[in-house]
Length: 326
Image (cartoon, rainbow, N blue to C red):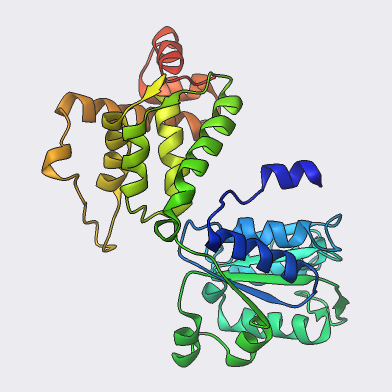
């Protein structure tokens, strides 16, 4: 458990983070259902991890699931399980995530994305400690602590009848809010150092130096993607193989993410400001590297990736070496 807590610790010394840690320890001492609120990328799952691993259930399973990532027709079978022959393709029975989390904690991220029919079943689990498996008439007893999270205004979802009011009250016994990164800018140098150290070790490379102008730039940046975006920027810089992180390198790494960000969900692209424009060849190189990593990560093997990219093996492995990929 101590090793897990070191890996999953919440980094920061600002007052808002100190208060968050106090709330976590207080919440961990109870067994009440908990609702974590916060924008995307703020670390809601990390908060849930810390609640679980500081609770009496710490030695049991912690099961996270993103309710928005599953198709509606699969959510019930994933959460509650099914019996053999209960539907076409059910060749053997399958335990649901609630059964797997028995005696432990289940974390339901993006809880407002849960369909209404699944909300009814979840409500019964909370009220009665029992679940209904697909294809089984007898109910199954479960002992699970439920932690839910949302980046939406859940009260508005209740008013719009998209989320059940009775389930909202059952989940919102304890409420924890996670601040955006722009609200705790003094933690940014600590987070940078943490991610640079951890990811450098994971990559088996030396930790690069970070100059003061780069630190100042990172502090003044607004981080709309929060801690997740900061981690992504650090990963990009480390993969580029830089030994010293200067302000131009920092601006370039952030600028590419800004350019790819879809602000209005209508395929709009936000480009860097005019002062931050970089040469076209540099931008082409960044996109080429990003595409190379994507294809490699989603291929069955390096041979498969090389074939897809139309590269001879020596050229493929040379590019891997240039990008610091193992």
